[in-house]
Amino acid sequence: MSTKEKILEVALTLFAERGYDGIGVDGIAECAGIKGPSVYKHFKGKEDILNALIERAENYYDEFFGSEEHIGNIPKSKDEFISVTLERISFTMNDPMIKKIRKFLVQEQFRNERISEVTTRHQIDGIQRMYAKIIKGMMDAGIVIKDDPMLLAVELTAPAVLQIARSDRQPQYEKECMEYIEKHLRHFCKIYMR
Picture 1 (tube, helix red, strand yellow):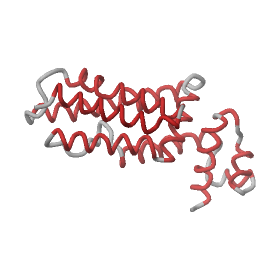
Picture 2: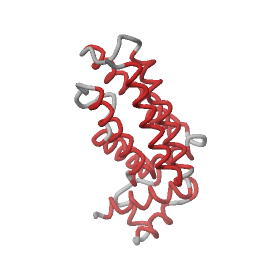
Picture 3: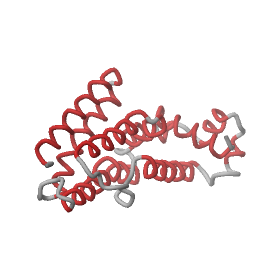
């Protein structure tokens, strides 16, 4: 792992544990096993580290989960839709980097306007727009009944977002949260899919 990657890894862990204001560049450097001035060879300062973390997480999430711009293939059946959606949710709930980013974003969203916007984009707007496109594609293919794709996306995603948040707060309920999400997903498909 390069020094730059090590700095980002350590910064993410520290931001998730202590918050953005809870650690400085020197503390990040110390935990990364380097001297404070060495950080400035890679980043202009703590805000530059934050920007790099957000960009890194967004690219990573886009690649492995998807986004409004990268929805992947439109599922061709109810079973495929359930399978792909559960894979995405499992990734979201279990990927160590995504869990840390989510914890950090949730804590900082009330202190930092930019973080608030990123959190809203990822936990509400972006996921709903992504699923609205998927649902619209499935409507066009005759798999989902005709309705408002955005409203269906909200109906689909809101319970999952809530259960993921519960799992983050109370990891001992992760299995039950995933079971609830799957039950909800199957119910959604039963109601809206042919």
